[in-house]
Image 1 (cartoon, rainbow over the protein chains, first blue to last red):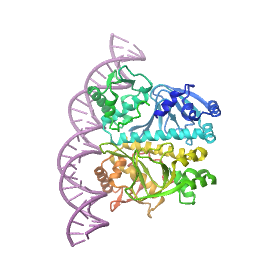
Image 2 (tube, rainbow over the protein chains, first blue to last red):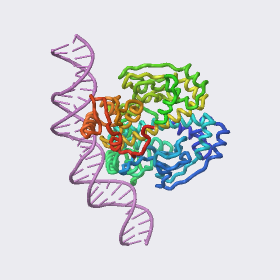
Image 3 (cartoon, helix red, strand yellow):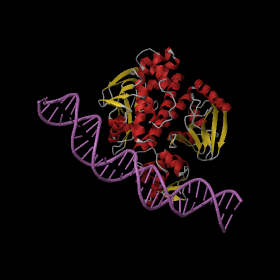
Image 4 (cartoon, chains in turn orange, green, red, blue):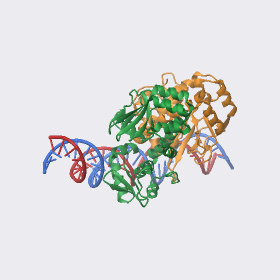
Length: 248
Length: 248
DNA sequence: GTGCCCGGTTGATTTAGGTCAAGGCCCGGC
DNA sequence: GCCGGGCCTTGACCTAAATCAACCGGGCAC
């Protein structure tokens, strides 16, 4: 995950992440050209649904800007988020035409899409793309397994701390850092969305956020803007092995 | 997942699942020959650790017979299973040399292994293998997301029912079915392992198993042998959309 | 301005599942 | 046959988080 970010940063080319993540690793102008031909952009407003679970989905694509979520819903309405898509993340799976999850824009969202059929043809012809996609999928699988540990074994407090750390790492690393090392970012999720991510209720999320604030681990400006004065202190609370990987 | 089983069954060739799962889909004797040259077998006894998280892992492979688990452990000992590997499942990731999870044999286990370096070379040269691997990884990702819903939102009873249904589907479909449609199988996991799968304690697992037995949803012969008189009744309790996909 | 709706907070109470503890059953070693 | 150790069950009790409910505050439509 982190090495993708750096890769993304290390190229200053165009506007479409798929280039970087699926192809650029072993650049080939032929492939790029073919990708160019079949790609197009779509925009969604905050709250809008990109696809419903069970619906036909005839494209794959990647997030250019904004944030989308994958969620599963049980008949009685219980919801679990199963994917959080930040810029450069990939959506859709080659070889499947029916969406397995609801995909929703939680902020205004721009996606770079490829019609599925031509994209699949491209994969079949260009090994690099398949390999890159494999790598990305394996990264996602790792993230999913990390997430399973969180859902199955962590306390509410640890869950919140983990989520904040994840967002801080992925989001704030590209953005603002105040003078004396504090991290700063806007939460891209409502309390309810956080709850769906963490397998909690929104009330518990709210209470734990208040608790972390009371304990000085985080500061809040308004309800969404988070300041983390000491990232290590937060990382302590995640319950994870606190080795490294942070910020490159 | 189910279509792999059928694929596996539809070929009556040799003893090594990797053939079927990673390659056979588009058979190519050249690739098979190359795979043959770099493969070897390893056996593990029940309880034995295949690799520890953090250790060097210089092979990839697939399960030939028996069952293995992937688990994550927090420093204070809390454990979460994040993968359950049944015959034909793949272990290890090309491009990573350090294992991210503990891999343990929960029954006697035979693995078919490939030294990582030559296998990676093979992937780079043969698009079919990379594509097949991508497909398998995407299946695993779907399974992981199903699992996340279970961990985050299901009750203990639903969790147990889901696990039994999963094992019944994957295991019993290949094995015994008694006369009047009842499914029958041996649990390949201890109560503690079930708990680690489900994000519960072993006591809760035990209580819920007793409850399902009391309610006539399952019967137990000894502690491990399960009889499911009416699979649909069990499926009702999983909380999942009870559409289809069962048994092909 | 007024009102209301949405997102968020906080409190009181309930409850599912965890924790701690006491056995039971079965199998293998002596 | 007896003992010991896994593995499992069951009971009594506790607690973290869910549930139910009241309320806050900002933005926006009228």
